[in-house]
Image 1: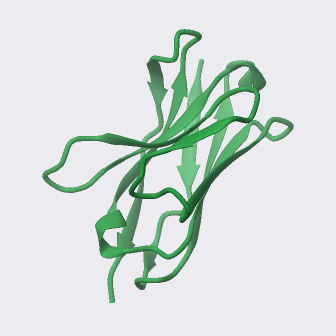
Image 2: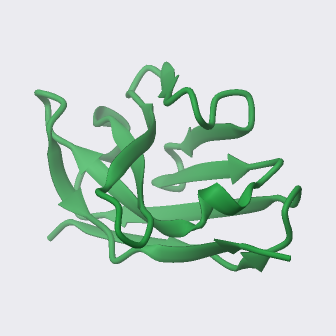
Length: 117
């Protein structure tokens, strides 16, 4: 079955960096788009970044030029490099597999990112 296991969440000071990882299994990783979502307390989940099978990427304006999504198909892993972190980036971050139509299909368990002095 499909499994998505996130790691890398932590407490970091404003201006710091973190790299999240999501190891996938149970499907042909290279064939599918992957996304990172986040949910802050009291807020709805929002998509942060997406990378399609060709490697093309898309970001929300709030993280563009600070976050980088990438994938290693040989390791079936998608990454989210987060730089210049702000307190507003505090959230649970989720790795999501998209189906062939681009819809959300499977979610990981989430990893907590806290940005605080």
